Length: 319
Image 1: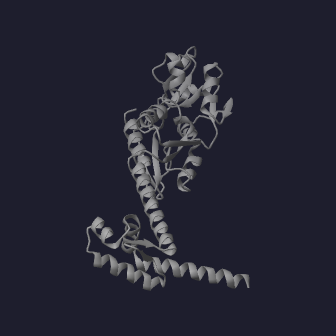
Image 2: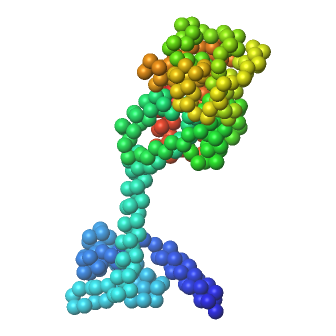
Image 3: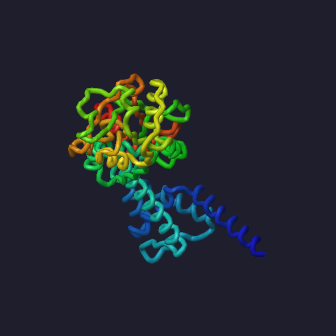
């Protein structure tokens, strides 16, 4: 019984929607104008149409709905209770259209919206801060959501549409990703200013064998480069520390506890404070340490995300 009643209600709702679609917007507009002006002729004059057109449209709507919608009261015409219900429906629809149009304009002109970015932890510092600073100053109403993690985590965030844009160390080519690579930056040995490497122009890989080394976990793209350098140089080393945050690696290096590995950009804050020195590693693989920005193939970026993509591409290309 309950199911039958629900089906009947749904069928009635569909019938009403069909009626309203068949009637269209124009007769409802005429009816609303009659209510506002008090007569068919005055409504026609206000709308710039022939009174007979208004009369025919109202009459046709009454036949379709099987309800009287207007009635004469003395010299004036007023709408019936059912007519007022239709006018309210029409005005609600007009309001929703205006609201939707206004919101779309806000999105189009970057007055509203959200951009989600997945960022390799080593990119969060000054590199991203400077690019985002310009974007946020220009578009303060856009929410920027930042998710960080090692390279595989960033790739997963992009692939699963959790974020719009990903930024991380260069990974293997993936046909599901639209990739924008950046010019390689040198992989550096990052040490305290008092470390012997700090006075060198570059660090030969063989010299690393005699040092206490600070490795990142295997999930970090930078660690894959470090392993490639060590393997190619045929060095068998055991790290003194293995950490999962670049900040931790930098803190250990600044304390003189070992040699960390990252780009000078990642270590920029410590370098500017005089706590760290970044010395390029003298090896072809280390000189090809590159990064990438990506989004999923087929994903259509919002205006805000597309604008940030272009700003990041421009900013990162000059670093």
